[in-house]
Length: 457
Image 1 (tube, one colour):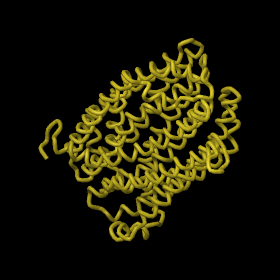
Image 2 (cartoon, helix red, strand yellow; image 1 turned 90 degrees about the vertical axis):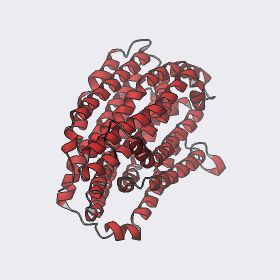
Image 3 (cartoon, one colour; image 1 turned 90 degrees about the horizontal axis):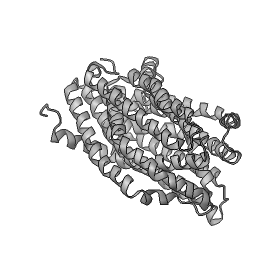
Image 4 (cartoon, rainbow, N blue to C red; image 1 turned 45 degrees about the vertical axis):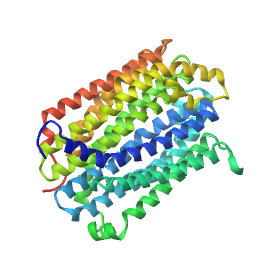
């Protein structure tokens, strides 16, 4: 490969490993979107409650999920370094993290009423939040196990397998949503609780399928997956040393965004502002999740190049990934501004047209904010995954600890009584994303990540 700022060869290689991850993430996004479309059709209050409950669930879930999925970097670096005998043991350390974290989530079930009473949204929203959150807690274990299975295949560059795993979850979730939210074909109409149960069952289905693939005879022959189930203290601690800061990035950002949504729920017309923000986030994911797939692909290639001690090639893959993301995001940003109704009408509720009219008034303006910052958010994703792919997880976690609260969360608290506070809130969110992207860019250009690795030499 010719060493330059980018290369056609690098762009092709990033694309080849990323497009299956983009499709897999699109399946996941479609699963979430269908969930919210059905809930929005069921009731606007259920949609708003689901948004805040998922936000609170994702903050600790991200720690478990992203720690387990850091297996991608271990597998990529061991593969690049031709140390395949360490891949099987690494897989099992990720599984142990998934099991422990998923089971601990069950402790949150009895605590959920106190948690949401403390948040103090309106009484109707609060009861719906509790029901949905309790159901989601049972989905933590299979979600973490899916992350471990996906991390194994992604790290090897076998990203097409992730499509199949996510497709199982998508199909099961859509079918069960249709049956359990509305009570079709004689099933009970459980509303938001049905959506939660559907998520639990769908994720267990995806986890079982993922394990069936991971534990195949070919993987045992190549990587000793079945026979490497022993706990390895040194490897486990090294996995936690790098994986926890990676997970903390997502957990801290998730916690900050959850607080952001909680404050939005306390604005004037807070229920409508919360529902509008949830719809906006869901639409935004249409643009951001493909960028996440590219970032994941870049992370794998960076890990492999670090394992091979080819850091300059890793930098070329990163820059190529950024260009791919920006080409797509420009098109999406234009559509968000020019035809927002194409997206927002998917969530329209006919049960309460007055509530929907308030939501529909807010969403187009919020999408303008999204169109202005999503290029920076793509930069955030690609650069942070590059740094983590090399092993620079502590810096990424530190940024997530320090940056979002003063730039996004606390300013929203100060404007919580303003009539147009929801627009100020999204303005602060835009500022946070832009500043964080510039911080990661400075760290990338500094180049310290090029001399890092997570594996033993």
